[in-house]
Length: 149
Image (tube, rainbow, N blue to C red; front, side):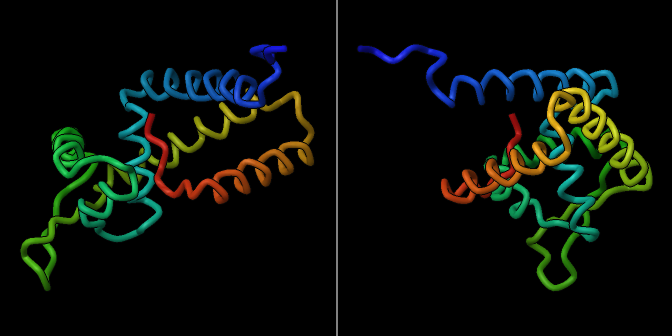
């Protein structure tokens, strides 16, 4: 007997993931930000200091060229700025501007609202269990890159 489509955990995970990520992407778009831009801004925000572009490329699983283009867009919008490394002039870091620092908490609130809406059918305990199980699976698979799409 051939297993049915809905017999697979991956099917259900994809169903929920598509809904959660799609709703969040639309909420970000309404603010003029893409998911990949959000991930980059959030990673810089969490670092609290200038982040080398090569580190961002590694963390996000993007090429250096893609990070450069992404950074160019965010620099043009006044959300990040480039800074050279005092010890190594070849290293180009990026940091948030005041506008970028102000935007990240607002976007994080959108993520919180999205999670609340998408996971409202689960109790707080069930949400904590789901989070722990997903983290366990991600760790077992060696998933360390930031999801960008």
